[in-house]
Length: 163
Image 1 (spheres, helix red, strand yellow):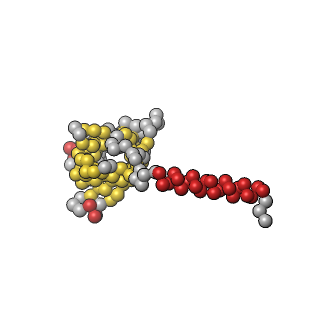
Image 2 (image 1 turned 30 degrees about the vertical axis):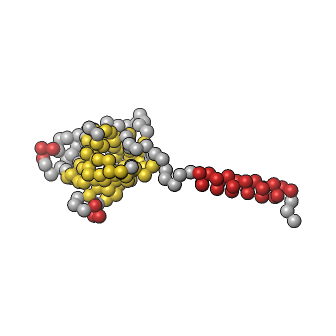
């Protein structure tokens, strides 16, 4: 036989289940989030990109590096670029993401990504999964053979490494 306390708890549990069901049935199936991914995003490789509007397209520049200085204590430069004349360029502040066009809700394509580590330009597509997460596909030739980068939104803090 159930005690008075367990009957009360059972009733509370039923009410909670009914309320949860109502909430799940009234919330739309797709998540609503900002249509533009402007702001700062941290990538898995220890770099933060600031995504901004550039003439109606999306662009992104490096605004933070996990390791902003080289072994000599100088700002990191493009030392591995195959074009010798480009090696003195600073990586911090460099625009590396260009020309992404809106292709649908939360999806951009036909952009380019410049990788300062190898001096090469790649194609890029990007999808905003939520207010705080982007998935970018970076590739040369076919998107099937590309790499996927996950970016998470960050707030700009006053810490070392910001450009």
